[in-house]
Length: 455
Image 1 (cartoon, helix red, strand yellow):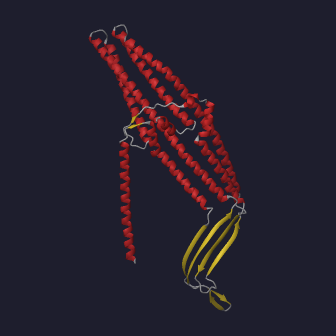
Image 2 (cartoon, helix red, strand yellow):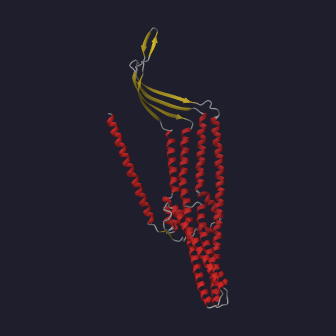
Image 3 (cartoon, one colour):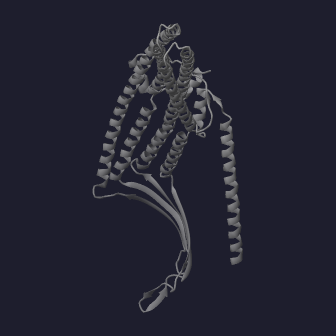
């Protein structure tokens, strides 16, 4: 028997080892395939990126696990509404056989070794709403966690959109910086020719070289910024940080321009998920108060079962039982009163949090609304400035080549044009980011909005 047990144990250990090895290899293979799949993604639109982010982002997975935990908490609370059934079996071995004195006579009352078994059921009949309130409260918390998943999805979507737009903006600024370098190189070539002909001094040549060096350093900084922004996107998509990505520009404009700030506040109060979450928490706190108050009242229950004890000295070795009872906590040192008061204070706290949340949401809506209006005005202004700066550069280049203007005028005109183009693209993407922030602030589902409007 001992050998058989040892053989079974050894077989189980070997089988477990192979099972773990197989599982680990499968996980590694799946992970490699996942990385290969991500590696093949080169060009993505904002809607495609949002879809990948919602499917793979780790924050969303964490929120989903929290929901699963509260789902099991709900099952635990529900179990209190159902009967509790317990079975038992035991074999007793006594060193001495139990007995009793009957006058001068001694008699045995039990066997020295005996078997016992039984099955018993317990059901709470009425507890003044304790169990039902606890179950309903757990369902409210579960609903809050389900809503939290949607909230996290929208937060991840906003983070992705901002990272996406920051990357596009850095690409546009790189293009502007490259144009500046090309303009400065062109000016440097002209300056070299004019210096070789003795038309200008070496100071003009050195000035152009210094400006070109500075522009090239700025270009390197922008390229590094673009790489960091691309890594932000890969991080949100749960991809390797150094994965190459090619982004398509965003051509989207919301209907928010015709919306008043008052209308935006009203929409936000109806649609923001955070308000729905805190309302579920308030409902759960109210139910929790009912749970605590139930301790003031008795709890009625029914219990029944069948029990057998092997004992030839007894008249009946087995028996059925049915018990109807009530439990009442008469005094517990003020614990119940304190628990009820604590829940009421908790409710007041959650109410204040709700009011603070509404105020913060209104502020967030107004900020993004004004940022959007401000950026829209900047776009109109900077677009005209770019055209003026281009014409200014053209005139100063002609003047310099004809010997009327100075090198400083040309360099300043190049810098002015670069500044105008930079301001234009920054205003453009500032508007797009403010637009995304505004849609988030009024509670719109960003993934759905961008997917529908990019079709």
